[in-house]
Image 1 (cartoon, one colour):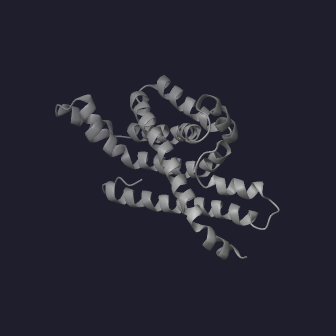
Image 2: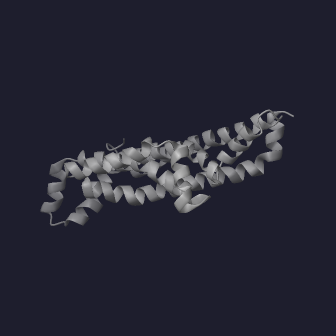
Image 3: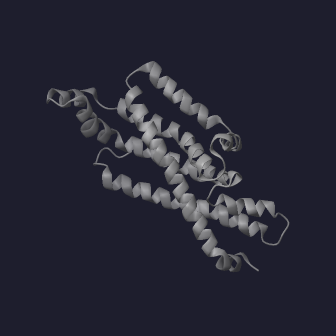
Length: 215
């Protein structure tokens, strides 16, 4: 049996795994945004807190994937719980770093002009600073997504969802006729998702970024 024939029989399983993989990545990324953007907003103006936030996020990114997923089994058990938390931790650095870079790159005169118009701190942040920093922040989300798409395959090691299960099944049955096909399905699924997400971010960037601010 050729790979196209094998895929024709197995495509519903691949589709379910692909959708589960994408959802897992989006959940981890969403939590990273909910945590990382506020942390960046609170620390980007001051040196020591900013360095601490980036340093801690950087430490998470250096932990080997299998080790972090394994460590999270004890408090969170198996399945989606440790998978989502691990992906959230891995996505924090690009989210925090790019938000900080985007906010610190703003022209102080623009911010001061907004304040001179009577805007409060939160209003300036919401209507001036974050919109102007958006292209750089979006680049951070793009990087984080591509990073998580690969790491999410490790979730299969803790019974998490996604395409990693196909890869793990292929590796576990090495030497059998269809082991390579299973692994190939999982790997190609991740590549397809990476391309689709990249196209989505490119479209969002074009639609939401004013001319002259594109990153």
